[in-house]
Length: 247
Image (cartoon, rainbow, N blue to C red; front, side):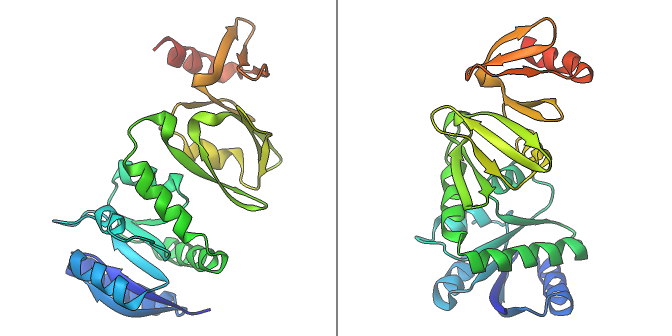
């Protein structure tokens, strides 16, 4: 499958490097336009209706996020480019949107493009893009959402509704406040990395818990959660866990 793409980056050199890499490494990407001006990029997106947009985040006058927010129904797949902006990467990861860290690694580029093409086939872009815009305007943990990949597709859930994650043979069972658990095809390591800057803590190689849902900590090394689950805290994690609770 060949997809039409637009490249938007205010740095001329970065734009040229990305174009060259795509032409060499990603023959299934057809570049239909490129620009250093985000306002022109917005016009190009509206005119050409690409399937894929490579979008720099940190641009003068209009950031990549600002550009995205200007589009009513952003139904194209996005691959963001960023230079170690932790806040931006965190926001993007929560929404299962692709990103590349500058300078762009060849292997990362190919893998991210291949995943984006699969997402285009699955037609999941619109919901993910709208979720990103929504999350960027949300300041409280209680209202932020993440995307959970499951066998049935993508689940969009509030972080605060998750009680804990339970890893099992590469899969993860996710427990919620008011609904039945769902099984994700992603490992608990994926979710631990996704939520590393949020109110979650990996108390055991198989348990990632929401700190907001702790009812009690028992001296013998167990936590009781709001769903009455009693989970073991690994010995090598107890000290760090107790420090988190005290602070």
